[in-house]
Length: 270
Image 1: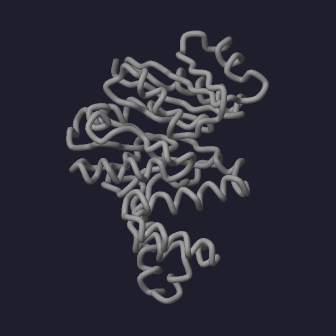
Image 2: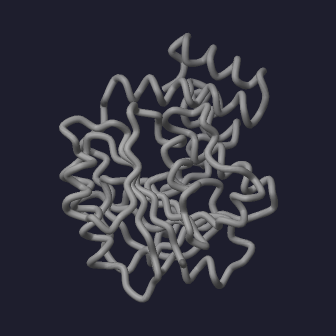
């Protein structure tokens, strides 16, 4: 088996069905399986998906166990040489998964890679970042950017002007389309289940980098990400802040977790 595609669904039936259809239509010349984990969606969404796609493996949870833990459930049952975590609110534009598979095959030092994400109008969307280091994240996300304005502007321009047509190494990729080398996961472990939602991919990618592997953005792999439909959700905003604090605790120590928590509680986190 070349690739195990892992999709976590939670109340996204229509989007998830369209995502699955795009996988079948666009994916060529690849031996793959699809494992879908349903986090206790309403209205028996898992059953509806099972009727439409009886060939895929479906794991039905009795509760919403979170993004990382659900992905781990899928990974534990996966047979593929590579794991491809794909959000249900995505649509493949081209033979995206095969492109990422070929890149991994040709670059054994690559622990993870991801493609070029676009919004519904094919404008560039967030695909990767350089900002999960302490200094860069604080510069971008807190009032410190006004005290270190030159450094903030320099970082912002660097990210904005990064050539989206060329392969390059990044610090982290978004979890919407994340190709992982299974042998690397065997070494560094799976997603940290302390994270319910957000920053779980950052934490895992930090472990991958620290183990000596590289992470790459592969622009020829093109995927639409429809996340804009679900933005500005208060609960998700709270998850983001809590996970950010946890990320610093796990990756950089308790002191930096306390600093992140202080900034958020004092509303200095932007």
